[in-house]
Image (tube, rainbow, N blue to C red; front, side, top):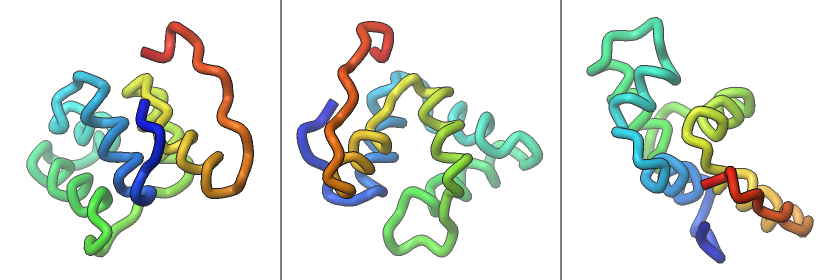
Length: 92
């Protein structure tokens, strides 16, 4: 888990990257109603600060649960001046 994140996009990308799961698998899980290529493109767009689409709060929670990576939560804590939760060994 990183000590600092550049922005929410960095936190989301870190969660996906550090999960060990292929990006395409995460995209397929996040957008099961889409073709794999379309889901991949959409998640890539959601993860870019210059993209035109964004993940909803619920989707970020779903992503953290699927990836078992909580970087977006840590970033939210940092940005709102809250203490980060203690990390459980099962988090990674």
